[in-house]
Image 1 (cartoon, rainbow, N blue to C red):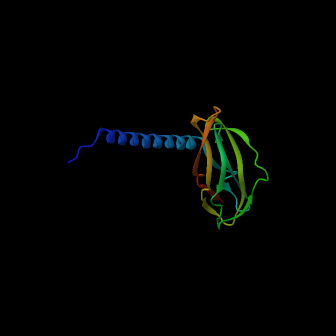
Image 2: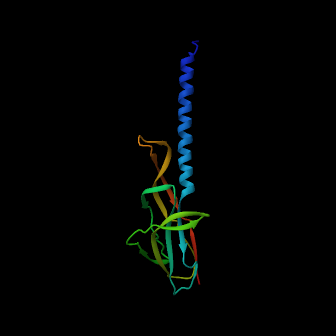
Image 3: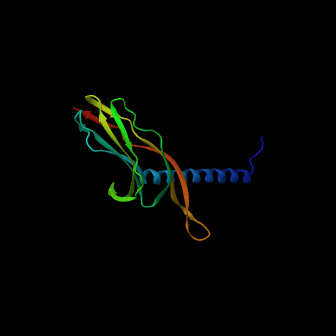
Length: 165
């Protein structure tokens, strides 16, 4: 049996350390994303009469230290129990609001007006959003600016329950 040379052992330790460091770094970026990017569905009234309508407003919240370079809505409200009219904002206006006890930026992605067709309790499926965020790394470029790392994730709203009386 041949003995493993010390240089081979050192190489294996080095490769393992690099892979472990990269995994930790990616986990840290994902953690920052998960703590700093949210999509929320706000309902004007979850208890509505059959003749009335309600509005669902979808907001994308982003913490101050994260940038969003792209997003794409994966699905739209399609529910046979409601007539749905989507109202997409003509311009995306960045606003500020306290969310989870911190100041966040937010944009209204869209609003949907729902008019129920029948009485009962209904669940609206979560809205899913593919997001590309740019998060500051620990490295600087040649000019001393932080290098931004791209993180791609899919986020969802909570399901919504509507009671039609």
